[in-house]
Amino acid sequence: MSNSSKDKAIDGKEELQMANDRRIEELMKINNRYVRTERHLEQNSDISDPDNLEHSERIQQERQQQMDNLKNIVAYGKHEQEDQKENLRKRLEYTDGYINHNADHMDKETLERTLEKQEHRKEQLDFMN
Image 1 (cartoon, one colour):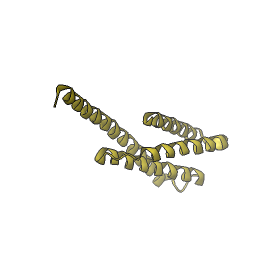
Image 2 (spheres, one colour):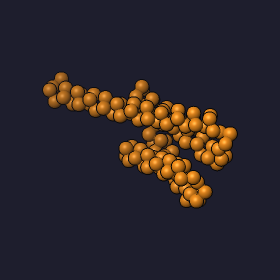
Image 3 (cartoon, one colour):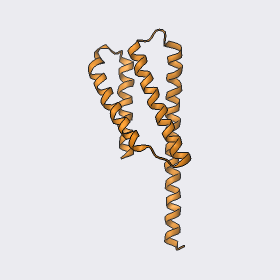
């Protein structure tokens, strides 16, 4: 193996390690959000608006899919990125419509969290491209 080939192999391994480090960090962030939301739902589901509960459940399902995808990438090198991209695009579109239709009826904190989630989705799409 030539020096150039060895350098490329080392660079490739380093890039993979850095990418996996980012994926693990993202997995931990998503997991933390997932756990916090689950606790919140458990503690407040009896007083929450049914529309907010439905929205929260969709977000939780999305988070679960993201976590599963990241685990598969890190553990097995399997990417479900195209499906993930399409899911993110759909969520962006759906949530934009939801915000446009319901922003006047949402409490300030929920609206801010939803807008923050939209920004996060946009960042994820940019990261995937």
